[in-house]
Length: 402
Image 1 (cartoon, helix red, strand yellow):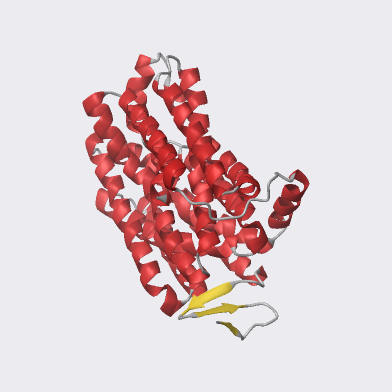
Image 2 (cartoon, helix red, strand yellow):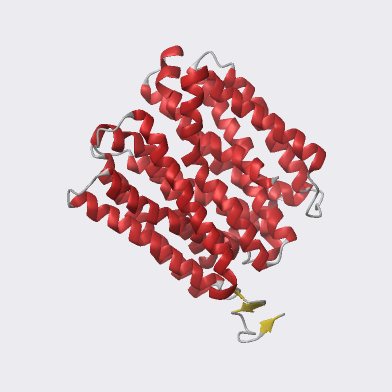
């Protein structure tokens, strides 16, 4: 249930990319204006993360999720019928703002109902959706645009939003007790507490750098494979779809090894894989060895680490203070999407897309390593899942919580 709701937000991020040139001609818009429909979508996802967490703490998860799906659906109708690029841009922002409800609240609902070890496994599934959405989107967008026209892409998103709204209304149970009001002073204190926490900031920055930095590759892939490597445009979607397998394997490994390896060691080991992928990509480009095989191999190594690091970093981040899970999940999502938007923008700089992307991914992986290790140094409440024990590194370090 949560997987489909989360997919609505992530799938729409890049699904419109294959339709940009045709839609631009139909709306008499230039390339910069059409690319803005992607940029504002990511911006809407980032801003919305700050909204739904505290709202769900006050009103309950279910009402907040219904509001998000309603906004997503209405904005989808407006985007589908847009007759100007300005209307389309505005609609895409609100579509993202509504769609990100699933991203923020799905995590909080898992934390509401699952113990830490089970939470890691379930978050692995949601993290898979967040990560593969941009990789799967070009495949769907290419198919719809080529067969039924560019507006059918927007129509499909609209129908998904309406379906999810009905799904939440009829079948979604409430998972948290509502406080009954939005306490602005309390919210400000919660965000201030989280922002001042080196552990939370470290997990948020580290998790964002290792996971959503891959958006930079997704956005640059058409330019790398078509313009630099001379491959047909139709092949790009298949190169991107290979990321799905890599991330899926990473999530599978997380689910199978979390009890034997432990949460912290798994996170650090996985982030090293992403670092190796980013560095190898940069070495390949600088050495002039860039090809579909070499570039794709380094990206697959990076994304394999993404599939393992994402759920572990997120679990540690939202577990710092159990009293503000909703706010922590929202702020974490804001940082994650904000970093993804920044990496995507930076990868577009310069006249060598492969080099720009390699620099961005390698740098993000290095920063992610530093941030995650810094977070662990300051997190006195961290837990590590191993076997059936939850070990806490606070004043009771060394004792097992059964």
